[in-house]
Amino acid sequence: MSRTGLLSPLCAVTALSAFLFSACHSYHIDATIENRTGAPIQLLEVDYPSASFGADTLAADANFHYRFQVRGSGQLKVSYTAANGQTVQISGPTLGERQQGTLEIVLEPGGKAEFHPQLTPPA
Image (cartoon, rainbow, N blue to C red; front, side, top):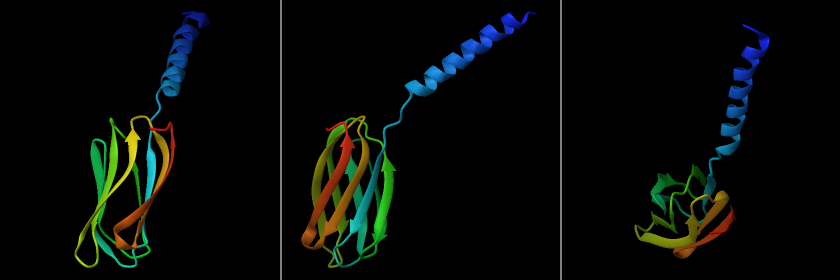
């Protein structure tokens, strides 16, 4: 077998591999939830289009990090149980498929929250 006969399939495989790796891109959002309520919270849940994540507890002044991928589009919602036993529900920004970047959620006293999305493309 000639050298040329071996290089052609090798070149084809290399070119195909380069194409596949460059064509595939996974879109993720890196979220940070900051508990600035002044007290520990329980049953933290963040609902986003097609799924949710959360933590059983989050201490006062603690952060929780989670990386997720959006399927579809819709509004982000946060819920948790405050130290006084009251359930808090807060609506956040609208998220869409193929968004990527960071999202900071700052939980504040009185059942309030600030949302700081740094996402592309915009929803």
